Amino acid sequence: MNCRGKLIIIGGAVDKGSFTEKNFDVDVAKNLNFFEKGILKRIIDESKYKENSRIEIITTASSIPREVGPEYVKALHYLNAKNTDVLYIEKREQANDDEVLARLKAADVVMFTGGDQLRLTSILGGTKFHDMLINKYKNEDFVYAGTSAGAAAASNNMIYQGSSSEALLKGEVKITSGLSFIDNVIIDTHFVKRGRIGRLFQAVVGNPKLLGIGLGEDTGLLITNNNEMEAIGSGLVILVDGREVKDTNLTEVALGQPISINHLVTHVMSMHDTFDLSTYKMKIHSSQYV
Image (cartoon, rainbow, N blue to C red; front, top):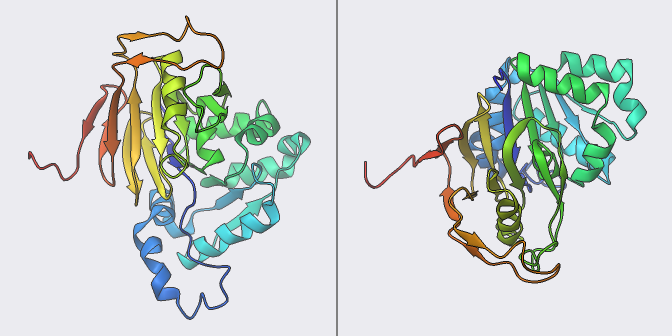
């Protein structure tokens, strides 16, 4: 679909600076590298009015929303994005409330924090808030940013459970519907540190039309026009392309048994690399062959 909005999906553990440390202000210079070059700054730069954009932090996925939300507000304020607040939605009825919807209508950016993506979709899915989010993404100069759970929930298909150590045993990876901003991909987060590549392999071999996207920590993708992806942040993005799978035993083995896969194609992206979802072509920003 044609979309005017932008997606910024982040693998988790966004380096916001050490706001919980008492000496943060004294040592603020040590924490500014991320602010100047990192993901939060990119979110502001990609928004409609830059530092003057209206930003709403959505903490629905978190089990400690009253602690998480203000941390993001502080971080964004340090980047001069002062028109920022936390929008607490903890029950489905709140997602249909006129006051909540009015705040979303006025927002240029929403940023979904980490937590439990199933909590996020079960509370927001099918509400007026969800409908308005989709409409704004399709038709306005609007940024949907999500870290961890907020990233995993952005696609039509969503991983919500699965042990990293047993991810290539049939049935270990659980998938449901996400918030449906983008089709034909499936996203996993905290990807490198938590060793989740097996989860993505199983998700993709079950439906090779899906491009698996594994986001490392403090790493993300900026997605424009619903198909042009640019790696942002300090780490790695792993892409798993299942279209050329030659063989698997997926349908022949019992639940709990290991899965075999022949010929999965993978790509590794780092900062400024791009990938086109319409052509499946990747461009390395600092290629040694150019």
